[in-house]
Amino acid sequence: MAIAKRKKKFFEVEIPLINKQTPLLAFEIKELEGKFIRYDLTRFLRGKNMLIQLKVKIKEEGQDSEKKLRATSVAREIQILPCFLKRMVRKGTNYVEDSFSVNCGDAQLRIKPFLITRRKVSRAVRKALREKAKKEIIKYVGNKKSEEVFDDVLKNKLQKPLSLVLKKIYPLSLCEIRMMKVQKELEFKKDDKSKELKGEEKAEVKVKLDSEKEKIKEKIKESKEILKDKEKKKVKSEEKEEKSKEEKEKKE
Image 1: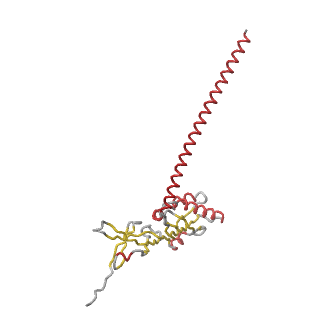
Image 2: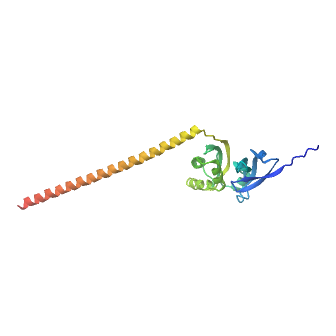
Image 3: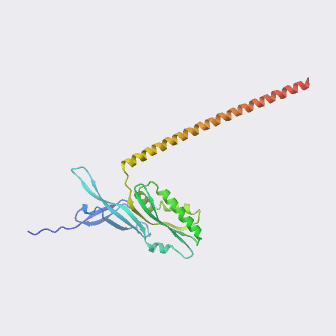
């Protein structure tokens, strides 16, 4: 008996970050689990040459009787191509770049900012720009999830406020994130989460106590001021009485 050959099929993989789909070849949809996709975002970003790397994940939908498998993707790396950066760098300017790791809500990210000044500047100014950019990016990322950070970079929500802050040091002609990728995913245990929750509760209690203490201090200050005003009024009334007595004695 001849054995029928298996044929590969195209399966649609969702890219929720840009609300699009892309087809991938496989015998079964389960085989796509863990595969990587490289997608060109030049048209999506209107001329900015950027590549995104995505990891495919298979999700189950529906109840036990009608379960369906759906292929979706999660961003793992974005990178601006060197040809775009070369076009942006002009004569009589300086570029500033950096590379550092930062922890977000669910992963460790490697971020490489890229800045171009409007004119040539000293080394001290470049150092100040580099340090300030790193500080602001770490502050911005904070406890956000990696998907949210990737979305903010694509929508220019990270770069625009960063350029306004760095403008106070020196005006920039370009402020971009040259590369950002997930180095490793962070796993939180239940004990760690409970500890974090306890810490947050303690912090809330401290804030409430501090606010109550401040209110009590303000009330004490107000009462002291009221007493001082009363004492001043008493002293003034006594002085007036003494003056009036002296005037009467003089007349007599």
